[in-house]
Image (tube, rainbow, N blue to C red):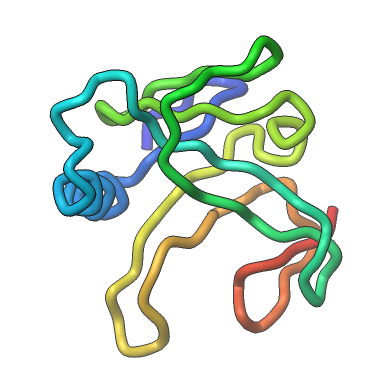
Length: 116
């Protein structure tokens, strides 16, 4: 991964899965849609990740593009997600998206929540 300071990154596997999901949802050909990532309170470690498709950028949103994928997050979430990589696993130990977050001091066994 080539690092550009203060961004959110997307692995090749995550990009492939996102493109597939956007095609399945019928929104792949609509350039107004993007991936919205966020952080919400909850989970066994205190904070959880949120991932969805959206087409409305809000005034305080931070907008990034990596590996051909447009990613948007709110400013508060971005403080937790700086230099995080969105990845995808289809292995036997769990299937789905996950975040490689260098800011997390610990994460839970499920991989869906973290603490800073």
